[in-house]
Length: 132
Image (cartoon, rainbow, N blue to C red; front, side, top):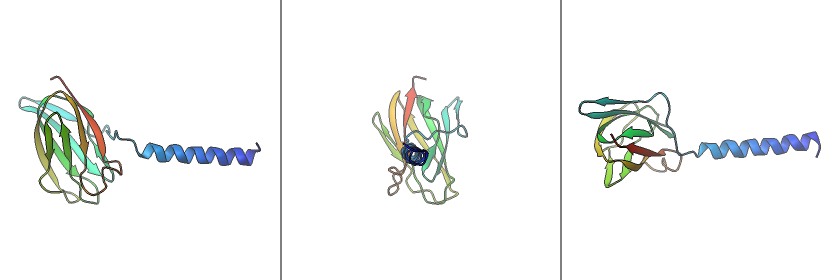
């Protein structure tokens, strides 16, 4: 195989890996946190195109998700699992924020954006709730 062919093959492989990586379902970042309070846990959530920025592991109990739409399209958040099916009553416009309060038991939960195809575009993750 000549050098030109090797470079072409490497370029194709690199593109495939980059495209595959874009579909990752875990989009937690270091710029979001949770805080334990006497009333429960406050979790900072940022929604943008097309990611959910939040911790992927939090303690069980009374939880207030402090959700901010930092993107340029409307977004929402939906949390399902362990008998929970919660979402904001209205989609958030860009720049808006709202709290969503949920009592969470230990286990796995699906978190996604139910707006249009946003979930399939990457706005989904698995949340692990641990024993508090």
